[in-house]
Image 1: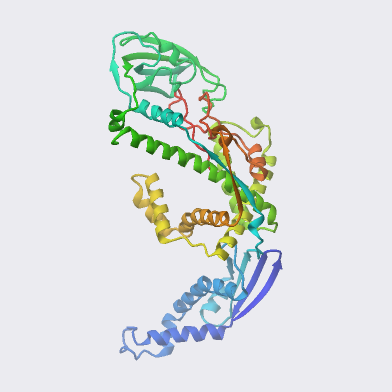
Image 2: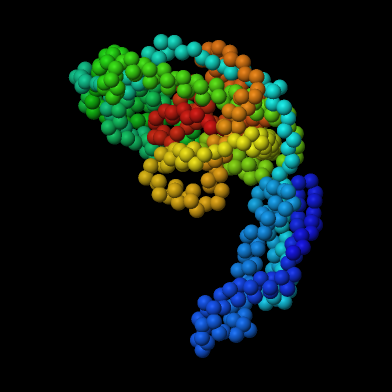
Length: 491
């Protein structure tokens, strides 16, 4: 077998592989000899089939198997012998000439194919001891814990039907039908909808017009959808809602005590406080972790400058760009609405894709040299989390990860990355700093990530008066009359 390098340009490589016809024929003959005693052909006793006849009957099919195996197995062996790692699966090209292919299968022509790929650049790791980060820590006080418990208790609050008029804090049960220009619109209808007046769950002006109504009342109210409402066909439009009040209920008092804890399935108020404090600590800890990680990545980005495999960057950019276009469609916005252009956005997100690929390669090299491993148990836990996100589709998800090449790697990659960050935290200088909740939640994005987001369409919870603290709001798909809950925008 001859291996000839025909292209070495930057990270790009092209290899021509030639396997002489005599070598291909020798391998074919060896396989035919191996099966000779097991082949059953009419007119011949077992093991007595003439080799020439056997070759005529099965030669081409055996040669086709050889070709497929070579194309499947040899590329990785060739790269290993060359001491190279391909950034993506090498592209294999063979002759498309039918006559030439027939000669190869007949053992009358050399088998030639080419490999095209990009190599992962050699990365010389640098001393990490110069990296310094500030770890922001929030001290949690009892009031914050009690405030969180009150919010939880609100969801478990009981209501008692009353005969009087609805006031702020009361829960009303209503049927409603929304119309624009006299025509009902999709998502603007609901029955037995429960709404606590003053909760600001519905668009501005809706809840206020229900104050003073009582069970059995019917009323037509008029509201105006916000100009930035996610549904473009409703944004800025005046709408009417036909309302029928079916029940008015007054809220019972809330007390943080053992009875409340029991109602929530816990043994005591102390246990409830313990759990809630732990949840708050976990939430803040997650934000702290992400901000520390960002500092590490920004400094690694400054430390390492090298060419990145174009195919990896292309794939990362396409993933980002697909999400950007999805966001645009959902928001009904254009790049012009966000004071940018598609060209400018593409340029910034291309830079972001290059940054992510470069940092991914650096973290991979650091982890490999440090002996970072992802255990089977960690992989199983990650898969279990995936299954929990799609109840009822567990079988399909399992089949996907079992049958899809690279799917398991998508589970392993984030685990590996976090373990590499843990490793780095043991080598770098970390300074703890006590901060307020607002300081912790402040957006500190810098560099390419921040610049790219400036060029991108922004996600907005248009019907919501304020985004949840510490989160970038994004609209959920709900009835247009209802406010959209804020969701965390995953990086």
